Length: 147
Image (cartoon, rainbow, N blue to C red; front, side):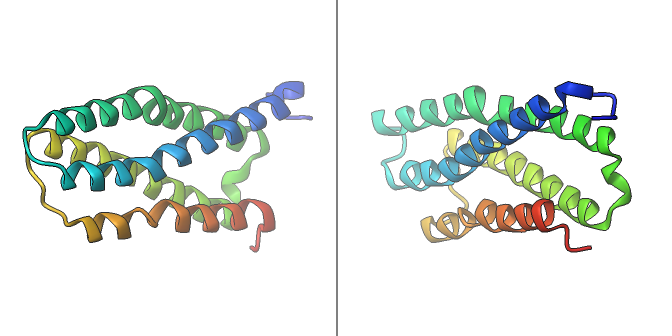
């Protein structure tokens, strides 16, 4: 390895992939939690349990994973000079969009906590597909490097 990461490159890459897996797990779980949360009675004991579960998922898995994914990803990008490649620029845009989706979910969790339920269960189920579709795009771009 010739970049600034040197022999640590593969360890950073492994860490990046591991935390992407954690992040994706959380991104798949949270909208499902929202569906169950919305289906329970407002101000019930069950609702307070869903609020607690959502908070824990955010604090323990989603937020730390997102931060580590970005730190390791930026280090890898700099190390290999990836920014100059078109495939990487599109991948970066997709990952940025996924990060925005994460932010939207955190905002929606806060709305649910306040008792607001602006989306239907069906809409939340459809939104649950977003991370999977983005993951397909990102993996193809990172592995195939089509341009």
